[in-house]
Length: 425
Image 1: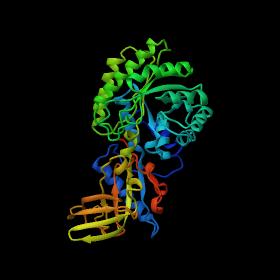
Image 2: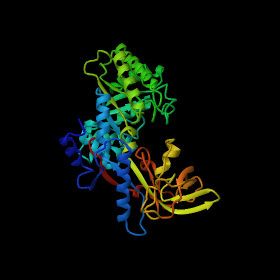
Image 3: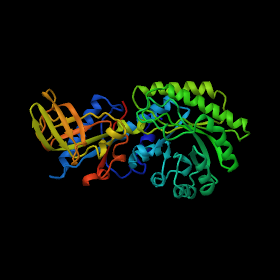
Image 4: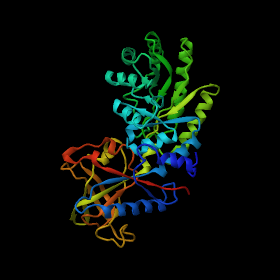
C-alpha cells in the first residue's frame, strides 16, 4: 500500500492507540533524512517549551509516517512474507495500532502481550504465541482467547500443550545454527537440533498436536544473511521429515526475525527470496510469515532527555541526564546498541539550539541513578551545554523502554510518547 494512499493513512490515524491522540506534522519526508531530523528536533523544541517549569521529563517522539513507509518497504521487498510484529520489541499502543491497521499479525510471548494486542480489536487468528517455553496459565489463557498457533522445541512443551490447549496448531522451532553474526543470538536458548526433529514430530503426533509447519530465528539484529539461507534449508529438511513420517502436509514456514531497516535489509530480503525459490519452489498454499520487531520500531522513535547535572574536569565535559542504562538505554547492555546524542540547547542557546558550527569537546554522559555503571556515552563529541539543555537520541524504538526498570525510583514506564507523522516524498 503506498504511503500516499489517503485511505491507508486515514485508517492508520483512526486505529486504536492513535485515534484521539494529537499527531504533529513533520513535513513531507518519509525516510530518516536530514530534513526530517530537523523536523523532529523542531517538534521536540516545541514540546520542551510547553513543559511546566521544573518538569523537564524525558519523552519519546514516534513518527507514524516512518512506520507506514517501512511497511511499504517490507511489502515491496518481501511480498510473499507476512510480518507478525514482535510485540516485545516495543509495545507502545500507537505502533501496535498502526501495524494492525496496515494488516500485520503479531508475535506475542506472554499473556500480557496477547491481551495488549487483543484489546486493540485484533482478531486472535492474527497472533502467533511464539514462545517455545510457556507457563501453563498463559497457555490456558491463549486457549480461552482463541489464539490457536504456537511454537515448541521440546517434548515437555508438547505435554503442556496437550494438557492446556489440545486444539492448538503448532510450529516446530528449529535452532538456527548460523546465528553467530546476530547482535543477540537466540540459538543457545531455543530451537530443536537436527537429530531432535523426527522424535519431536513423532511425539507431537502421539499427543495429537497438529504440527502445521516450522519456525526459526536467526537472532535479533542479524548481520549475516547466509543464516537465512541455512535456516530455510533446514526447514525444508524438517518438512521432508514430516512427510516421511506420514504427518499431514505442513503449510506454514515462519522465518522469524533479525531484520533491520538499514541497507542490510535488502540483502536479507534477497537471501530469503532466493532460498524460498530454491527450497520451496512448488508449495501451493504455503504460508510464509516472519517476526520483525526492530525493523518497524527502531528508526521510528526518537528519545529526548534533559540535562540535570554538569561537571567539567580538565578538557572533559561530564553531563547527567534523566534517563539512562537502567531506563531506555538498557539497550546498550542488553541489545548491544550504539547510541548517538544530538545537542538541543533550548535553555542556554535558543538562537542556535542545535549548536551548529560550535566547537565540540570530548564528553561523558551519565544516567540519573547512583550506579557508576549508568554511563551512556564516553568520549562523545558535544558542544558545551548547560543544565536544562537537552540531549536527543535518534533510533531509540527497539528494546529500549520495553526493557527498562524503575531502579532508584526512576520509572521508565512513566516516559511518555508524543505522536508525529512525516508525509510522502
